[in-house]
Structure formats: structure tokens, C-alpha cells
Amino acid sequence: MIELAGVSKVFDGKRKVVALENLDLVIGRGEMVAIVGPSGSGKSTLLNLIGGLDRPSQGEIRIDGSALGGLSDDELTRLRRDKIGFVFQFFNLLPTLSCLENVALPLHLRGWPRKKIDERARALLDLVQLGNRLDHTPEELSGGERQRVAIARALSIYPPILLADEPTGNLDTRTGAEILKLVHDVHDRLGATVLIVTHDATVAHSCPRTLTLCDGHIAGDERR
Ligand SMILES: Nc1ncnc2c1ncn2[C@@H]1O[C@H](COP(=O)(O)OP(=O)(O)OP(=O)(O)O)[C@@H](O)[C@H]1O
Ligand SMILES: [Mg+2]
Image (cartoon, rainbow, N blue to C red):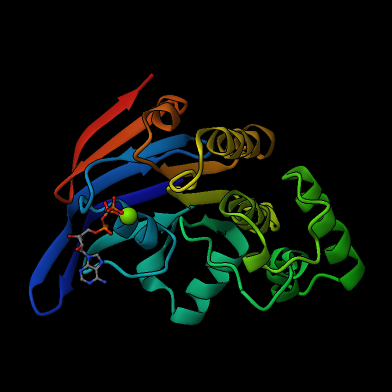
């Protein structure tokens, strides 16, 4: 379960930006939620806070009962590593590593034995239909293929929480549909809690719950 209470995020740059203001939100275990809203409304900020990549200016975030604010940076890193799979729009793959090595990395960080890592990474790349691209580096792949590697990497640890920021954003319709199916599979098969930021109405409509952000506020929370 993910709980936010009175969460605000203020960016104090040259000009002060209130990216999120006093958000209250509860997302149950195993929910699949689309997060929509205009550009600049705070969607990525929200995902980054929930994923422990950034800390709120005010308020509290709890994941399965543990308050992120009470965790040290090391503890937060561990929580991310053990519980959260991230898929970003711009992939964040390591350019010098092959597909196989990119997918294997989170498992190495968790200290899995080498043979198990290799098996799991290969199985995931098969799942995203890239079993024939194991030794390619990200720059030798198309955008859709990179996004599929990023999803395979995010899934490597069987994350109970999957956070995806416009995972279909710069893909053609067909590849986007394939990625969406993959995310739904993860949800259905692993029972993962999935939060998916999207500008795509098809993606949003495929989720049982849609959260609309506007100017850092929750402007809508609909269930189908
Ligand atoms: N690191 C930062 N420093 C200063 N301001 C920031 C920073 N990150 C985000 N912002 C500001 O916070 C607001 C919310 O940004 P955010 O990235 O969450 O929007 P978004 O809803 O994800 O938009 P998009 O759909 O364009 O990705 C924006 O006005 C943005 O300019
Ligand atoms: Mg964004």
C-alpha cells in the first residue's frame, strides 16, 4: 500500500515552483493506476517521490507502512532496490553495457548467484521478444526495443511496485500497444502495484483507476 499525507514538493530554484501541493492519496496493493494531466502538472514529481528518488518538502509518504521520511539515504536506496521497478521515458539504460548486462544489473546489486542471474535475464529478454539481441548495446537498438529492455530490467527483481513514466511516450502505436500489454501482464501475473504516467488516452482507459493532476493538485480520481 502506498499512502501520501499532506505531501508538497517545492522546487527552490531561481524561481520557486510548487510542483505538488498538499496531496493526500492512498493506492492499494495490486492497484493499477494511470496518472494523467497537463505538462508541468506534477506527474513525474509524484512518481519520483513515491519511488524515493526525491524527498517531499512537506508531508509523509508510506510504503507498506514504512515512512520514507524516516529512512536514511542508504535505507531508501535499499527499499528502491528491493521493492520498486522504474521505467522512464528515456530508458536510463547504461550505454556501455549489453542488453543482457543491463537487465542483469539489479540482480547483481542484490547479490544473486551468477548462473541464476544469467537465466533470469535471458528469460526476461525472451519475454520482451529480444532474445536475439542479448549482446547489443542500447545504441544498437530502436526506441521501442530500448523501452522493452528497460521494462525487462525493471521486472528483473519481481518488483511489488512498478512505476512507469510515459513508457509508451515516444513509440509508434503498435510498439506502444505491445509495451502496454507487457505492463498489464506484470500486473496480472505478479499482482504488482502499477503507476503509469501517460498522455495517451488508450493507456489511461486500460487502467481501472485514473488520477488526474492539475497544477500540483489532484483534480480527479476515477474508477471504472
Ligand atoms: N528539478 C526541478 N527544479 C525546478 N523545477 C522543477 C524540477 N522538476 C520539475 N520542476 C517543475 O515542477 C513542475 C512539475 O514538473 P513535472 O516534471 O512533475 O511535470 P509533469 O506533469 O511530469 O510534466 P510532463 O507531462 O511535461 O512530463 C513543473 O512546473 C516543472 O517546471
Ligand atoms: Mg513528466
